[in-house]
Image (cartoon, rainbow, N blue to C red; front, side, top):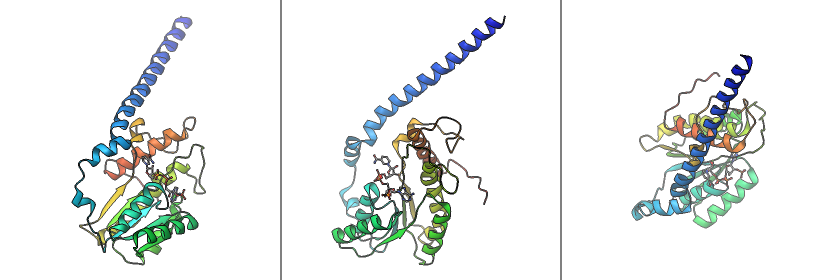
Length: 245
Ligand SMILES: NC(=O)c1ccc[n+]([C@@H]2O[C@H](COP(=O)([O-])OP(=O)(O)OC[C@H]3O[C@@H](n4cnc5c(N)ncnc54)[C@H](OP(=O)(O)O)[C@@H]3O)[C@@H](O)[C@H]2O)c1
């Protein structure tokens, strides 16, 4: 009798393991195809066929744009693109030296001197809050907030505030800066917009309540994908927050 129960349990757990394996394989394959078609360089080139040339040359003098993680990669290109169209750009960077180097490069390539550096480490909610209150004293309406800063840290690192690092930057810091900018975005209404740079990688991970990846062996890639899915859900208003403090 005991042997039969044991067999039955082993059988059930093998079926569950097989189901999980098939689900993961299906998810990776489907994402691989969808990702190649939509999120790679060839995806961009395909989508860009539908860009309107006149939209690409729009001038945006007088618009105040905040770009996080603006010293490199997509954030740098975004800040430079906005500056070249005449916007007042506020580059939010965590490292002063890297930020200053990017700032002077953008000023010289675009000729736009209305580009500014703000130093803020998004992995700390208290730093985001103090940056936001200092920034609010400028009393500038914010027309565009680009939440670009993000990271994929493979090791499990805990911030001084007790949060897993990927989650702290990609989700908490991004949410905190967005929320703190709301009064300034409202000043720019109805023109204001918030753009959050998520990732097609989010399709590889389902939503989970284990926000800090503490229930199983840590996997930075999986955590990044989970974070990007949460970013998307928060931005699209599909998730509600239940905040304390
Ligand atoms: N590249 C891709 O293929 C790809 C695809 C999908 C989505 N994305 C998303 O696009 C965004 C930009 O990625 P990227 O490829 O351009 O990467 P990147 O070159 O590494 O840029 C990331 C930026 O975020 C900043 N950052 C990281 N941690 C920060 C923190 N704690 N506080 C403030 N800033 C912080 C980095 O600053 P430091 O220079 O100081 O580290 C850097 O400026 C990310 O959100 C990423 O998830 C990228």
